[in-house]
Image (cartoon, rainbow over all chains, first blue to last red; front, side, top):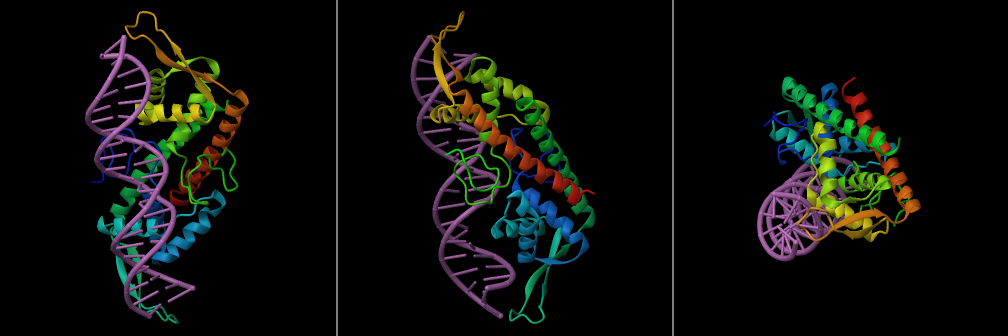
Length: 132
Length: 132
DNA sequence: ATATGAACATCATGTTCATTG
DNA sequence: CAATGAACATGATGTTCATAT
């Protein structure tokens, strides 16, 4: 279910129109899709990059949540998984991900953007209303 | 516990530094404190006003969550409760709230502002990173 | 140790129920 | 019905455990 009649919501499971801010899951899915646009990535690599990116903003996503975002994206047909042997690694193979449906990915990101804009509106209204 | 060593977090119960966006509870507490600066309010009145304010942004807080925010603020000593008879109401009395400790309230709002600024940073970074 | 994945635990909330005028 | 409050239910996410290099 990609579309939604109400506001700028993205995720599937929520009540009519009570949502506050965007969910971490949707936020991570958006970032993962962007990363995969340029190259292949594997799970922990994404975890590390995201943590590095958000460290200055005191947000350190957990590995489990990043993996869940990946499974979601795969289940929903946005990305696909490949197996790859890493040179010089004792590990036989790791899971690398790539975009499966470029248009679909773009559409999802568009929905997320709408929700982020909405959230930004909430925060800016809060700043104006409470700290003027 | 008002202070926090880590980032710009506000609420008490969370792990070291993994928080994503600000919690609805803290957000509502900030708004309630601002409303109470000017006049007395009672519970449902706050619910209705908040819903009106946020309707354009597709956020409709539940009455239970607003009440929980009020109980929190009272428990933590920011506000106090009075009982008042409403003219023309069949109901004997309702609970009205007012600021209990002006300085403390100001300090709390300052913490919330820091967290909102941090969240705003996350959203703006996301817009820059994913929709450039 | 790295990498993936699942299982379990908990918090933040939403939904529903109860009570009193 | 308005108002408050509590109870219950669920969802989103964090923490821990398991397995295989």
